[in-house]
Image (cartoon, rainbow, N blue to C red; front, side, top):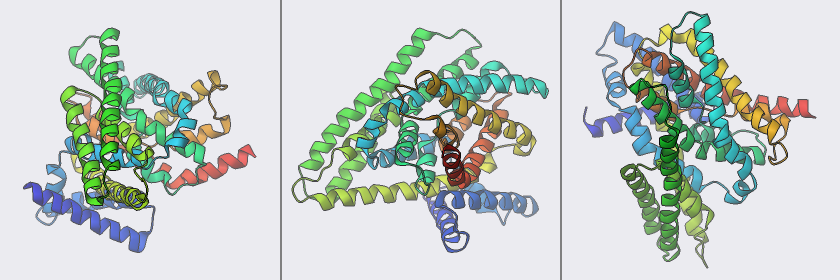
Length: 414
């Protein structure tokens, strides 16, 4: 399918779903759009079996989008930059300790607990899957998704401190999650159960610290350029170029693209460009990136719904999908509880917030993109279908009930 036709169909479908949700269903934006996209995919699959010509274009659209490449190499940079640009850096500094712990130690703990529990539960229900693949599954779904988190918490009643912790964690935990994923994937491909910790440490330093340095340098240079001019159009172009330069350079240098664009976004967003009478320029730039964020979010969640076409035999894995959801929630809860228990004095988080932090840890397109990028193996369909179930539950169920969990937690606390 021609590239322009793919883009045109995606925009048209996104506009239709967005209008239907805004006009009649009136669910929170991303939840309503993804629900419609999933429902539309189910209906299309049924129609496709009865009369393939009727559902031709939607089926071809879903099968012609390279979801992994589109999300990880194109959309993710712009979405993360938009989220980081509009994040209040002063609030982030106050909550930096819990953000750092949850985005590093929390991801490792969650991966280990998820993989271990899944391995033993799978044996109980007579599913044979190696332990290393269970850990690989855990590395896919343990990092919270910054796009899903940012989209859902906008309409929530989260206290400001918890909102900052959850947003900050989701922006920074991709580094450690990606290192875990790559390391475990290399082990599964090599067949060697021994982890090269030296190689892992070098990879971590290169990906994480290299990405942060790249984003800091380019963010500072972009800030200086924005500060020196009044022309809004040029300022917008500089910000767009900043995202693209970081994405290209990080990819070429094998650095973390998410951390590079997040650092650049925090640097340019936190360091206001409004000098003298330039207030309007910065406000307009914030509005521009908010619009980009919302538009790309809509298309991303439509694409997630369309991925049902690319998850083979999903109906065979609904039991394991449900088990994966329960285990992940337990692993997420433990990954918050354990650091909080041992580091409570240094972390400004109380026990009453654990349930909220657990339920607000959403998964989204990044997890599906990584799952789709897995090479062929006897366990690929198991992991892919399980990831899809987890993401659907996370966005629709957790997203719709987040405010109830917040209210219930504060009633218990009071």
